[in-house]
Length: 297
Length: 242
Image (cartoon, rainbow over all chains, first blue to last red; front, side, top):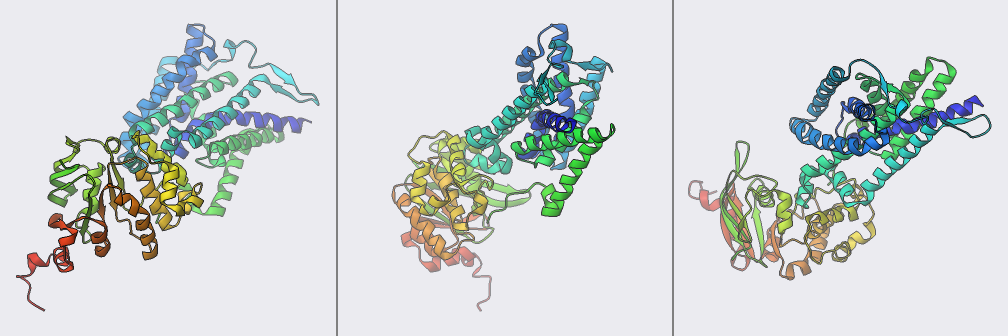
């Protein structure tokens, strides 16, 4: 029975990874930008929520009302001030500048908050350890269920937004060809800034769930970045539903790994990631790693 | 007053001067063909009028107002639409999505997805198809439809026939016929001289970035055009007779 529990728990953990990967996948798949500051931005959001919960004694869920718009504004600023400028100098430069930004942010957080680990769990009553008995010996956490539901709504909602709304179409078209969208009346600069804002709003949500399920410190971002990257790549770049699936695969692999051996948690996750990566390389050749430029004619 | 007016326009590609001192006007309801050899600066000129290439000197006026510094997306909202060379469709989007993107211009008018489908019947069956799966002719039709969806006051067509079979070119132009006849204002770049003369009421011939010949297509003889096209008039005295 504990094997079944592992799979259920792993699937729910996958919901968490999907939320963490959402912003990265959105930027990577839709805007073709690899944001190496993704992990530390998640930590930044978590610290912002923690600061509001701790100092002002607001519920972290309530604090989202302030933090999510702030993260959106930060995304807009990130695109305008850093990504847009560095993208002019070639495809590699945005990656380098987000790497630099990650280092600056990490150390700024360290300076502000010190090396103590923090968590949002103490501010939400018993939510983080409440559980539901499903019978047959399977008990699952309420927080895990909430996380999974939010993941489905978030990634599914974003996917539908990209397909069915005018702004969604404009975001996809701008990612493909920023010059040509201007020829049909779309301001590509502001579309990209809005897309970056949306991505960072999801990073704000990721910060909440990170803080609720575990503890964090200023340097905890790189691990989140790796999980997010693995989930996004397993699911296939560009598809947000795929990212949800990728998160679930990663989560199940990790819990099954831990089931086999206490040290197996991370190892099995990385193993699943590499397996999928190798499989893709074998099927489609090395080209899929690079951005596919639209070729018409 | 003319709808589009270009005055002493200079356009550069880095150090290369692609267009120098070009001036011309297009009146409302006119169809003007830009012809010239490869590298004469026709495409660059159209791109500058559409706003995706900043000129280094001169002025572009549209409907009486100076648009030289106006960004491309605002020019679309004013009524300038370019069908770019090589179509430049959004490959990951469907035909219908490509057309719907143009709603961003916010221009009111009677072009709808359905009307584009009627104008280009070949698109009807491909409405939900991704553009990467379209044939060349279908792509060109989608590209023209996408520009028309912005309800333009002037349509800039860049090498509609590029890479298409003569049969498909004929089909695309046939679809455009009723649009051209409906008092639309069009500035088109065309490699096929016969077609250019047939479609347009006026012809402008460019050579090495300058206008060398301009006039009504009725008064153009093939000899005059070819002379201007290859620059024979300019060099005829210095070159020995064959």
